Length: 254
Image 1 (cartoon, rainbow, N blue to C red):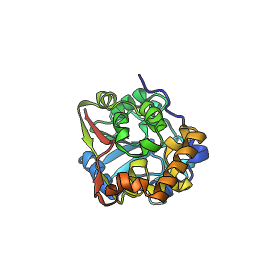
Image 2: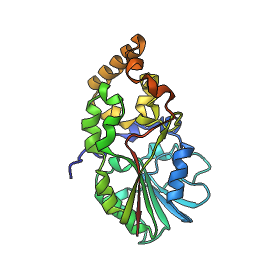
Image 3: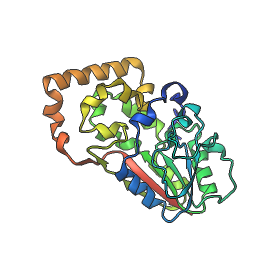
Image 4: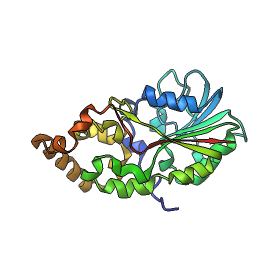
């Protein structure tokens, strides 16, 4: 496997603001929930603070980080403390399984994906980023380390598809201009947001590229926003309704 940096972001130390910055975007959620089909029981692995969990089905959430489990809202059930690579459930225990922008943080992503397939008798739905498409976002001009680091962190899409079931579908997911889930591509049209340290703190890539690279990128972006350079190059994005970037929905079937 070419990817090797999974599990490199310490959610116990740095994950406390995720529930504020990383909220469920309803348009992305609609795609996720449609992919779950008519499943009535769902396991959400690497559940974090509960983004994208459907509320009209029985969901069992799995999350190893106490800091992330503590941020789950009251209307969601408490999460089970366990890891993706060793799920404490029987074979075919759920109608469906889901994993939302989390597989890049699993120490053994292949094993975790096999576990998703094992415990689901129906679809396995994985929301992730295609490492090969990260350069589509202009942020790579300011933080080229993003391509190197995240390119290794995210398992290849073909690898994910091969592990989640037969005839897996890979569906590009457009990012809306006012996306409320604060991953990097969510701010393709709002570059000023990257100047906010709380925004960056909820995007794990900033925590693994190194402090010097992150500081250099932020200062470069600040200057380009102040003198109009960013708008001269990318200003058309401020009114572009959606962005076709690296976000992917992988749906595997039994």
